[in-house]
Length: 126
Image 1: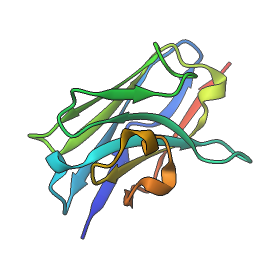
Image 2 (image 1 turned 180 degrees about the horizontal axis):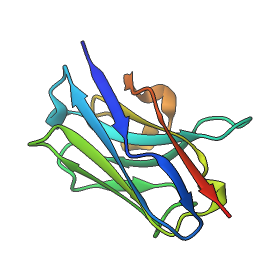
Image 3 (image 1 turned 90 degrees about the horizontal axis):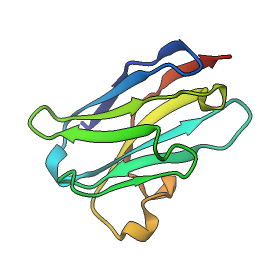
């Protein structure tokens, strides 16, 4: 049974930082592309960042580029998202997701991911 468990969310002031983790089990982690998505109240879930199986390729939404950094440690079956220079507009539930490697043209599409975590809340106060 595949499990993705996010942690590291919390309340932070604008300009602050957080580090999210996603611990994976029940799958061959190093074979999967991993992604982060987020959903704010009343809004659709949106792509944040993704990383290929080796960590050599990363992808970011324009809204977070230069502020967020995605990484992974295949030895620990864990993916990370470093959130810096946080803004109130970053407030959302953050989800990690996994998918078998496919065309990178679809890497930003949530329906192209096979497994999801339960989410962790990030709240940024002004």
